[in-house]
Image (tube, rainbow, N blue to C red):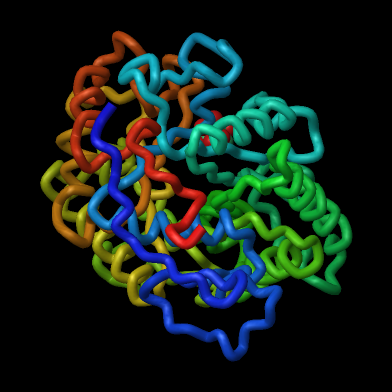
Length: 398
Ligand code: BMA
C-alpha cells in the first residue's frame, strides 16, 4: 500500500443540494431546488456523481488513477475466478486498479461482445464501487441498421436520427442501455456513478458512428440526442459523459482543433478523453521512439489544456501495448509520458485495454515480460491504485 492521497480540495454546499466545485462560478439564482449542480452535463446528477467529478478534477492534478478493462471478469488463462476478487493486475502488484472499464456492446443479449454476462458486469461494477473504485463503460454497439457489429460501417447514423427509418428501433436500444445504467444500484438505493464513453474513437473510420461512415454533423446530432434522451426522457442521473477521439487520426498532436472534431459542445461533455495507443509502441506507428514520446506528451498536454479551459476533466480513456513486448513499457513509455510535466500530469486517469488471452492482453500477468516494470510503475508516487484511493464519492461538505 502506498500513501493515501490527501483531500486537498474544498467543496461548498450551496443551499440544500447544489454542490459546487471550487473553481466554478455560482449560478444559484437560476438553480431550482431540484438542480444539484450547474457545471455537469446533467444538472440533476446524483450527489455521488457530482462528487466523483469534483474529486477526479481536484485530487488527480499531479497523480492519475490506473485503470484496466474488465479486470475482475477475466484475465490471461482464467475466467470469473474468485467472483470479482481476482485480476491480473492484482496477481502482479497485489492491488486492484482504481478504474474499472466495462463494455456493454451486444446489449439486449445475455453476454457482452466478449462473453461476459451482463448480470455479472452489474455485480462486478457494484463490487468495484463498494471498494471505492471508479467505473467506466464503453459501448461497441452493433450497427442498428444492419445488425452487424460495431465495425460494420454501412450507413447508419443518418437512418437512426429522429424522423428517420430506424429511429424507433435505435431508441429501443437506448432504453436497454438506460435500464442497465439505472440498474446499477446498491442495496441502500445509491446509484453507482458511471463514466459513460459512448461512440468512442469517432474521428476514426472503423466504427459506424465514425468519421466517413457518418458526417460530423450527424455524429454531433447522434451524441446530443443520446445524452438528452438518457437524462431527460429516461431520468438517468448517475452518468458523467466522456468523449474520446483517437490519436492515430490526429495529424498534428499539438493542434487543439483536431481533438474537437465532432465535439458536441460543452453542455454535452464532462470528460475530454483521448484513446492513444499510437504513440506508445503501436505497430501502426513507424516513428522513432523519441518522436512517439514527443507526440504522446503533446497529445496529453493538448487534451489537458482543452479540458481545463472548459472546466472539464481530461483522461487517457484507452491506451496500452498489445502483448507488452517492451519490458520497460510501463515506466519508460506510459509513466514517462504522463509524468513529463505539470500539464501531462493533469490527466485524471489512464485505462489499459483488456486481457483476453496470451495473444491479446494489455496488463501483465505473473511471469509476463513487463511484470517487474509494472511493479515499479505501481510503486511510483503518481500512480493511484485501489489502496491509494481517497473517498471519491463524498465531498467535504457531506
Ligand atoms: C477490441 C478487442 C476485441 C474486443 C473489443 C471490445 O479492442 O479487444 O477483441 O471484442 O475491443 O472489447
